[in-house]
Amino acid sequence: MLLIPCPNCGSRDETEFHYGGQAHVAYPENPAGLNDREWAEYLFYRDNTKGAFAERWLHSTGCRQWFNMLRDTVTYDIQAVYPMGTPRPATAKTNATDAGTASTAADSTTTGNAAPSTSSTSITASSTTAPEGATK
Ligand code: ZN
Image 1: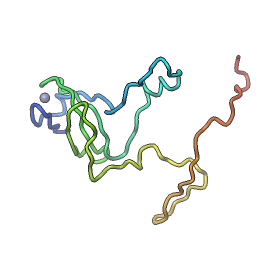
Image 2: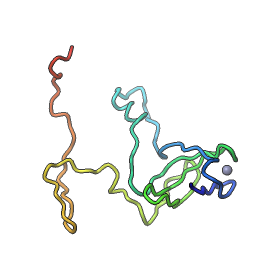
Image 3: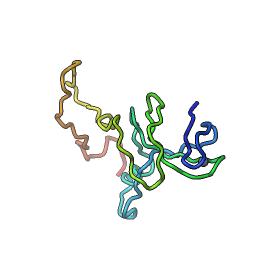
Image 4: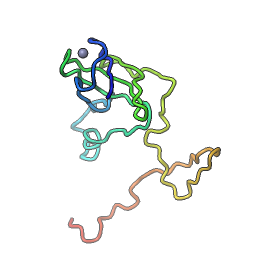
């Protein structure tokens, strides 16, 4: 169980809070200009970071205020608590390289001390034709 330091109330039990998902997800500037895929990505796709992760929390049974928290998803270590609307604080342990950079190359065999290949394997649709049996 987490002991969460509310910026208004001090440290309280995790059961007093509600998780609000990933922090710093910006609302699209022109939502009407997005296609269905871009809109769905805004609504539903979130990072699944291993390590430091910025997330929103609500102190629902206390001051009822939202705040951001930087928490390590591996160790549950709370690294920072900061107000909504302020940028993510810099920490010594930011794992920005872990965020969604998994290689899909078939030959990505990295040994212990070899640097991972930086050859970009962009994921683009290689075929725009409809699958067999699809209706037009
Ligand atoms: Zn509070």
